[in-house]
Amino acid sequence: MSSLELKDASLLRGDCFIAGEWRNAASGKVITVTNPATGAQVGVVPSLSAIETREAIDGANAALPAWSARTGKERAAILRRWFEIIMANQDDLAAIMTAEQGKPLAESRGEIAYAASYIEWFAEEAKRIYGDTIPGFSADRRIVVLKQPIGVCAAITPWNFPAAMITRKAGPALAAGCTMVVKPASQTPLSALALCVLAERAGVPAGVLSCVTGSAREIGGELTANPIVRKLSFTGSTEVGKVLLKQCADTVKRTSMELGGNAPFIVFDDADLDAAVEGAIASKYRNAGQTCVCANRLFAQAGIYDAFVEKLSRRVATLRVADGASEGAEIGPLIDEAALSKVEELIEDAVGRGGRVTVGGKRHALGRTYFEPTVIAGATPEMDIFREEIFGPVAPVIRFDGEAEAIRLANSTQYGLAAYFYGRDISRVWRVAEALEFGIVGINQGLISTEVAPFGGMKESGNGREGSKYGIEDYLELKYLCMGI
Ligand SMILES: NC(=O)C1=CN([C@@H]2O[C@H](COP(=O)(O)OP(=O)(O)OC[C@H]3O[C@@H](n4cnc5c(N)ncnc54)[C@H](OP(=O)(O)O)[C@@H]3O)[C@@H](O)[C@H]2O)C=CC1
Ligand SMILES: O=C(O)CCCC(=O)O
Image (cartoon, rainbow, N blue to C red; front, top):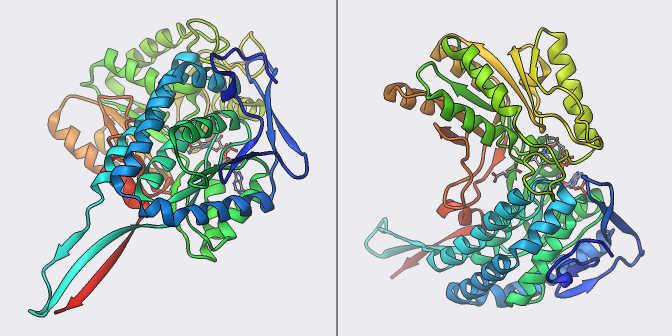
């Protein structure tokens, strides 16, 4: 169905995985998946409805008693196999990802390893779901706290990390003894289905993990309204997250929301400027700027402002824009025309308000949805780009004078996911780290993503934490037993 060359062609599915069966839509409707770098069709997947979604939920419910009754060690062994099989198929999975999402192959390979790391981590955590004993409030009482799986869970995931956002949810869910129905983004469903192929091969029992592709409203409507689903984990825009939170209210579901960001990246006068530039490149231009933890607003202190802008611009000019599948590509195309238009509008507004493009600033000569990596000097809080999630390879740099001003500007957003700052004064490092209203803070560090640390935001960036020892708690209920003796 596609010209994609894989070592194992069976990873590329055109059907969905529901309660252990590979199925097409009863309606026969499909969604076409295209390569943003070329416009070529990569594959088709079923456009499922609420009916098939309900069947997937029923399948997850049927599988729940046996899966949750297994010991943590048994679940761990299956998850460990899944991790190993994902890594054994890293090249093919990366090729599928680049074809449907556009990111450079090196980044796709990195994302597959990152995705697998969540399965590995939570395979290990499956064995460590400890409860508590609490000293009784009287001599004839004993108090014990159990941790039990929440039950059937749903996940709705975005196109920017087609594999890792699934494993970051399915890993802890399955480790905890929950079952899960996943709805991947319509632009990148093939990576999700390939992960299901490998889960099945690893021995994940039928119904424990299902994947439904199709209309977001219909599938999302069922996942949020169905009372069997006890938890929804979502990664995507704040706008859709708010809709889903409202929809989940009727059945009072537990939720984990990993929503938009507007990360500040602050460079103080005493920073190592070369390190700050490399950190900015890693944080801002990864995945062509399409991540929720990408630096969105760069702040440089007055003493180093000009030097930072100059060094950053020179480095950005060296970034190689190309089809993600080609050797040495560093910046691939944006996901679609809408993303490109948004970036253009933000730049137009910034320039109209006095911003100066030092490098890039326009559509790339390669055409399609390629955009030149861009730096805008003289950015200010009045610009739209200061408030909005850019989701593209554009770095606005704002000048500031003092520490208090930097903190005030950094915090002046409804988002609170990731923040970064560079500086060497140890007292200031502590002050700034404590004052930033963000769930993740990179200090002299532009890359913060790892399965061993808690990922998640404050304010309108969401709730819950993914990864780390905390991540599994989002899939567990506490039950307190009070025993009279
Ligand atoms: N925090 C993050 O990591 C992300 C943030 N974003 C931000 O959001 C902007 C828009 O991106 P976009 O792809 O539209 O993000 P969305 O939030 O629209 O999409 C994320 C996921 O939600 C699904 N979805 C969309 N609408 C509904 C709905 N009403 N009910 C249930 N599920 C729904 C999508 O399905 P479908 O694909 O079928 O529409 C997809 O699976 C980006 O420019 C960026 O600013 C985007 C992606 C990730
Ligand atoms: O952008 C996102 O959707 C979050 C994933 C990024 C990461 O884990 O680093």
